[in-house]
Image (cartoon, rainbow, N blue to C red; front, side, top):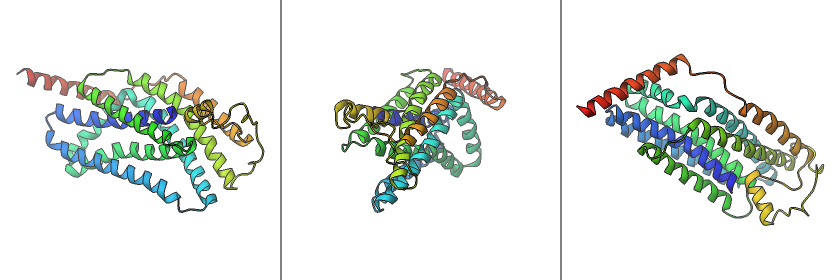
Amino acid sequence: MFGNYLIGLREGLEASLVVCILIAYLVKTGRRDALKPIWIGIGVAVGVALAFGAGLEFGSQELTFEAQELLGGSLSIVAVVLVTWMVFWMRRTARHLRAELHGKLDAALRMGTGALVATAFLAVGREGLETALFVWASVRASSDGTFAPLAGVLLGLLTAVLLGWLFYRGALRINLAKFFTWTGGMLVVVAAGVLAYGVHDLQEARFLDGLANKAFDISATIPPDSWYGTLLKGVFNFQPNPTVLQVTVWALYLVPTLALFLAPIGSGPSTRVKKQKATDEKADAEASAGTTA
């Protein structure tokens, strides 16, 4: 459940921050007339993400067992690729996310209502689709016959919405770069488990060989239905009897990816980001002056 909670928290907080930045900028610059198209774009993005997730869940139920395993394994691998790209991208841009979004919003304001809707849709929609795919793959991998995995995701999303609201109200301040680094590292561990489970699905679909070639079997020591077996499965997608291929893929992904992710970042903000930051500071100063007057 913790792994799914982390996914909901991490992915939901990214979307919440994007929404907060867009709304706060429009309010601060006196462009409340642009709020409606922004909310329309956000609403459409959320609807598309929910529809995508529902399509994955209910559409796969109509397939044969082998087709379900092939689809589930393939999408699990795609989800791991996307979430890996996302955590690296967010780690590098978290400190400059505000300036990047403000630049896109300024361009959309000059173009009109349709551009505003599209900007909000694209900014939130990408997060929504990534979240729907990774949540579906993770819940499927950690499913224990209960609603606990899905409940973990929902609790994470609710926590993210609450934190986003507190950010907007100015009641909460944290170092986002450090937050996304630590949660990103934990998410890489979760993604490694999802990847191993996806490989197992492909083996059950007979797309990959080696299903009977077990790396080890400690089911007697850690029963899958025990409380600690359930805990390990929920947090790390742990499997007591993985195949050799699963363990190999898990290690080849986790070790280098985590090492690269935790390596120091030496590059600073780009010239465009610095320019946008100066523009933001000027707008803040003008807004403060107007309020004082």
